[in-house]
Length: 204
Ligand SMILES: [Zn+2]
Ligand SMILES: [Zn+2]
Ligand SMILES: [Zn+2]
Image (cartoon, rainbow, N blue to C red):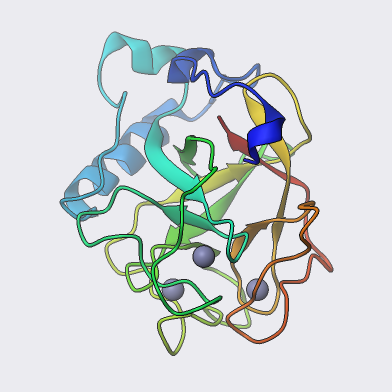
């Protein structure tokens, strides 16, 4: 999130959006459990089992925007801030908002499952593309080893949600597509592209 996008107030996860009803909550609980079992020690799923979880989906905080590459990355990993395609140093969270990612699978018209965290670059990428796992700034393709199952919500700006996020078909990454500075830096070369992308939001 660019600083001009305003306040950094983070509402409780269960009050973030209007689309809180998950019909298959049993599946959701299993998904969260898998995340807890499979996730790296540095990744924490919150709101999973308490009564509050009944009011909304599980989310994971700690996600940030990188102003060097425009990408989304996990910013509180003990291993550091990953690898940025802009300079092959760690991503930067300078000026970023504080984002949370949904733990979950497809819900038609509301959110798209299949997104994964890459432990090599700390980035968020679409992990079930027929073309493969994209291009990782750390080298080779992204990896989903150890990742939770994330879903990215669809839509535009609304309270608690920042629109303008896009999927890049060149690298499979999630990036902020309406920055005045442009489309960032793609690990596949040149800038990210939003061609063919849905309109995604990030929870703030
Ligand atoms: Zn970066
Ligand atoms: Zn990667
Ligand atoms: Zn890209």
